[in-house]
Image (cartoon, rainbow, N blue to C red; front, side, top):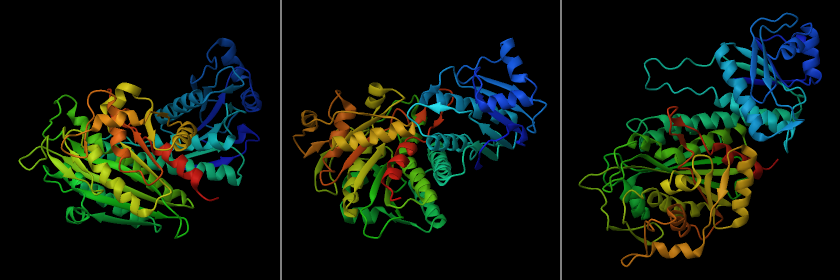
Length: 492
């Protein structure tokens, strides 16, 4: 999709398949000009009550005189002078859904002096570009008759063609592409999206962008490094584990990188601690942390950010077999710490802990791990907020602020020492579960034991990584949050 900027002097001269005007019943300059060009059509619609301007309401005029545009689409913005972030997303979603149904090739969007609380115009353009691109996603790989692709190819947004605005649009485009990369990988079934498949996708990324270098560690190399915890998860599977490292160098050679670590369990049966059969198909989404790392690395490379980023994906399949790890087994992690595995379905932390230890060799400026880690996080926060943990409160606040800016929100959860004792074991340095209480917290406590030497945060995305209703599908979260964080760290 192409997204361009153009200041609006006379909306009647704009040629497009659809002219979109975001307005209410109190016309701004743009709506007044459209009303005048159409000989009072907008005023008549309002007088008849056909358009009341409520947030997200739509009215499409498939034929309109006085404009060069073929169609006119009115999007309600509410009666207030400024609107909230949520209302802005609501009206953008309504606009995108309506445009998608019209099968037009291009559109021109006029915001008519729209103001969003606490947002600069460039931020609105970035969000609009991101949602437009993300809405282009269609899952196609395993469908004989996939849903038709969107015909929308070009969108012109009302805005000055300044460097700041162009950069905002470009970043929104890149973020949207990254979200779609994550959604595609998440939606693929486990018989296609294996650890080796993820490695191949990473190598494609390395071939696409000169600044990206990819290396893949096989099980023999991981064994040599002492990754007994990660390898305990793949022991029961015919699919070998892979540790995938995607390194982007956009900064100086000696600059400390920011490291993203993704849980990549390409299918999770629970292992010997077998999950119930209901909804087990959704466990193909247990690699959405890895998918978000891939999507973010794609976006970072597309934006050409001036910083160094390393993405680490711990990819494995958790299956039961005669070779599978058993409850009560004890393994030694790369850090040298021993772990009593009381439940083989608490496997995400077992692959992440070795990946987090491996991350230390990059001398990172920061490390963020992303994982569909615990059902307990869904109980605590539902399907809206990401569970956010950190060993430094200021880092947690920074990421929370980035989530607010990206409309990809997280909530800071406790990581108190008082919870650590729940992981005590009589036979190893720690157990891999902490009992029925505070399951998301004790999982984060487990990970914190491998991150003491650097600035670290953990994002539990179990509740937000995919939609669990009839519209089942990956969401691409938290690519938006991660991109905003890395953008904030990039040198201008």
